[in-house]
Every structure is written in C-alpha cells, then in structure tokens.
Length: 125
Image 1 (cartoon, rainbow, N blue to C red):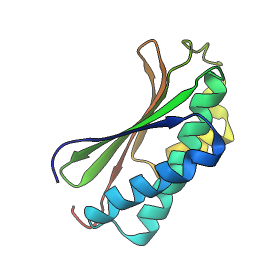
Image 2 (cartoon, one colour):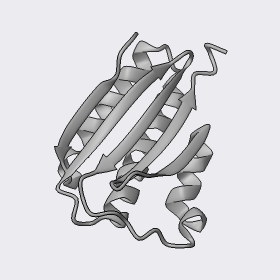
Image 3 (cartoon, rainbow, N blue to C red):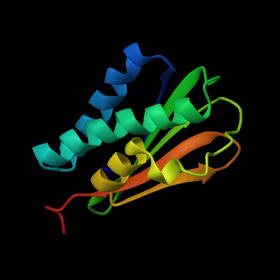
Image 4 (cartoon, one colour):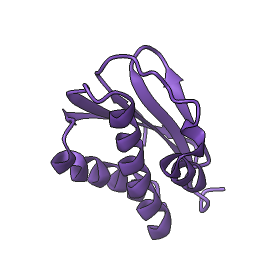
C-alpha cells in the first residue's frame, strides 16, 4: 500500500475506537499478526492518552499512518498548546507500554503535542 492515512476527530474518549479500528485495518492490510494488531490498538490508546495529558486543551486528535517497507509509522497529535514535557515522562507506565509495544517511540517537538512511533511487521522481515 502506498500513501498515508490521516484521520482527525474530536479529542474525546468515545471516538478513540475509530482510531483503533483504522490502525487495525491498516496493519491487517500489511499482513501484521493478530497479536501485533492488538498491540497497535493499545499503542494508539496510550499515545492518545499521552497527547491529551500533555495538552488537555486539544479539541482535535489526528492519527497519521505512514507505510514503510514492512512497518507502520504512526503519529498521534493534538491541536492544543505546546506541551510542557514532564521530566519523568519516560518513567511513566504509559511510556513503558508504548516502548514495549513499539520498535521506537518519541515525543515530537513541533509546536503541537505529538507522539511518533514505529512498529515492524515481523512477518515481512
């Protein structure tokens, strides 16, 4: 598959199931395992939680899914004010989950709160 998928929706918990479904469909189209798809669903939830915690004034959440060779690159961002990143962010339970279920995870510094991560499809390697 080529091109990116971009989905924006209200930054409210009742809409997160849409982002989980979109990432699951994208991963399934790339022949990810069921376990990896479940990991990605959880990762999207945790990334959204981190974005909303860092910038609670966000009204819109955006999920961007990029397709690499044998991997997905996800970026979850909010439209709120730039976050003041806590020093102990990487010690949090949410960050531990993101790190454990992703190949890489980072907080993007671009004026908008965003979490970027990659997940490889072990079948494609």
